[in-house]
Length: 127
Image (tube, rainbow, N blue to C red; front, top):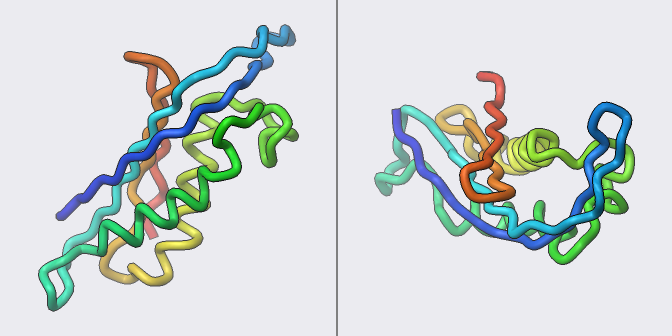
């Protein structure tokens, strides 16, 4: 099995709802790591092109840059936790990338780090 990772960052604020109480709005430098995995390389010896993953990831996280996540879809309707952010990014990437990578590769997981030593990982279900 091969895995490649691509990383990106965005700056955004959020105020979580925890046990019915809203936190004070605060910001993070969010770090995102995406893993694409598969067992077969193409004729060029690639699992996929790093640049393609970088471009799609930039599109997915673009709306979050310098934003209040609580007012940015889809987090205007759901709690903008690191877990939910990781899931959203993973699902969006999978929707956009997996059709071109299938059947040999796909988005395996997304890790979102909102603060040093505090990360959430979302693993996508195997097709």
